[in-house]
Image (cartoon, rainbow, N blue to C red; front, side):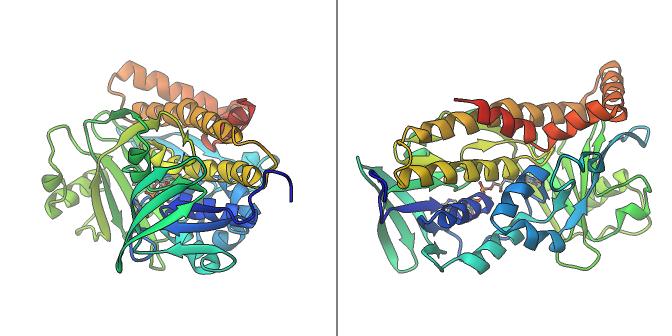
Length: 409
Ligand SMILES: Cc1cc2nc3c(=O)[nH]c(=O)nc-3n(C[C@H](O)[C@H](O)[C@H](O)COP(=O)(O)OP(=O)(O)OC[C@H]3O[C@@H](n4cnc5c(N)ncnc54)[C@H](O)[C@@H]3O)c2cc1C
């Protein structure tokens, strides 16, 4: 064993969301003992991320996950930008064009909770991959050579001593707060509403593909297909609430119906499967490392969901961190490598995910007719030229963010 390596090191991961579970699996594959604490009694079923980009599919393939989830999800080759006012397609980006470059020239529509549950079911509680549900971390204390965690369990309070702690505990991260790490950025004034319907919206509009972005100066919309739990799948629409609209009013069944009918008029009421209103933030933690505490995923960065980058960027954090932390624990590198993790992934979060998602939202909601037209012309030109279309897809699939982050020293 190399000098400096620690044979019985244990890493505690707080949160069994997609980032926590992928990071735990990647560390465990490198021979590191992990304990994952999840406050919920079982893998949470949350209707959030559904799009996994080609760059993430490549990483998950190395863990044996992509091969299992591709047959269960929906393969989405193209995505389209629509002008909702004229009901026309502005531009289409087709990942077929990237066949010579991307190992997976498609995005996979597969809900995050299904991926998380399948990793938990297949790998957890074997080979020192310990996952404890109904275990909420309430506090942590750092020492020179370990971290003590306080945990609330159904049997009462418990404690665990870990060599390192990774906070994958989402936007309200207890780990981040207890480590006194700033979460800089802003919250949008308007909330978003997500409506899922089993009605096949594609029968009303032949221009739909599995992923659609509708620009509209009054009410933009993202419309995606997901598998859901039924054979025909679900269409999931995300809209902004109006500035003076309350959550209660938006959730009123008649207002949900009106919102859907205004978008895609059809005879009869829309059936819905789930509807949520949620706040949207653009925030990045001041650092992703403080001593023996590390942050990854939503605990480290939050962004709006336009472009599907939050979970993808979080999984990229988890894979980058697992590699570096394993090298530190195995004595192959000094622990300053963990500062490099923080610099690289913070760079990707700020320069790519924050910048791109803020720009995506502006494009969807632009009100000035001249700017809207200029945006559409630019998007059309980008999509029509194979070279610019390729660069656009590389950036949107987060390959540029990975290349640039790797160059950060
Ligand atoms: C509507 C919507 C659509 C989205 N679509 C996409 C998309 O298509 N693609 C994409 O990349 N991203 C998307 N996102 C973002 C994505 O959902 C998040 O970025 C992703 O869930 C982050 O994963 P995570 O594991 O970091 O955190 P989370 O998924 O939030 O998981 C955190 C886990 O930690 C647990 N936890 C919290 N506190 C504690 C504690 N103290 N102790 C123990 N456990 C704790 C929670 O119960 C939870 O299970 C979307 C988000 C929304 C809202």
